[in-house]
Length: 333
Image (tube, rainbow, N blue to C red; front, side, top):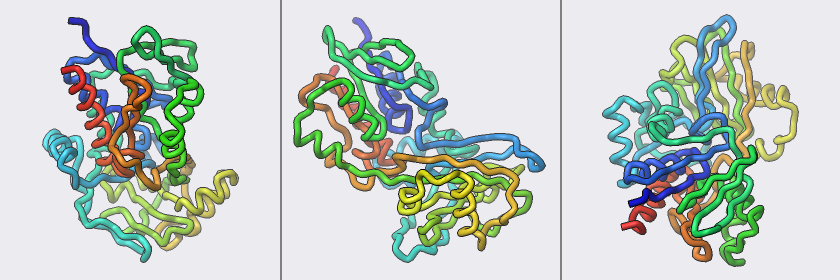
């Protein structure tokens, strides 16, 4: 019997989870992602910092919780295999408007990217490749990329941030019904400007290495040495609030760095030896679709999944990808 095939667009937690489900069930799977590495907003960087040594940064999602029964077995598997570790029960919270969960927080043993590496093991993956359009032809989905390549499969899952998914659908001139199109197109996303900083000296970020601030302009600070992933260098990530990020998106990078560093002066030295900015245009959906994934009725074997469906957390993204994969497997039984 010929193996069924699936292309997954998007190599974040959702896309990798769907791909993992299908690959383990005998599907031939290809993951295509526009980034240089896997993980999407599970993003980490290791580099040599002058005068400080090798440093590690998590500059996207900082931790995850385990509250969902679908996600729980995978989290326990990662713990048992040494992929992830317990980080903290809670963090100091200076934002009176922010309700923070008291659930235990976990992170990757060496960085948050350990999660995507674990999910992606053995998968066929093309990175640094942008999908331009898709087409249903001869009972299969054809996928066209920016390097003038064409790929095809029985099933197609788009697991990118929803605005990027809707752009692919628009470029492909696919009709999905006015009501559904409006609902999907109007799900808003938060923006986030992240600053990575290296210091000679230690910070005043309280143990265990994370703190929520008032939210304007700084929402969160991580000290990665205290987190346990950067033992040889004092590295820090600052996440700006959505409000600040949106209002200052086009400002010069040095101004952004200075704004966020000055606003963090109670916790951080002001004489850094390394800095870098990363902008998350689609940081988190601000509301979610009513279902954990979507099989588009007008188009056979075309699925949408992601944190806009499962919820704006790592476990929400995992649940969306897991249930999407299970639905495809069920359809083939």
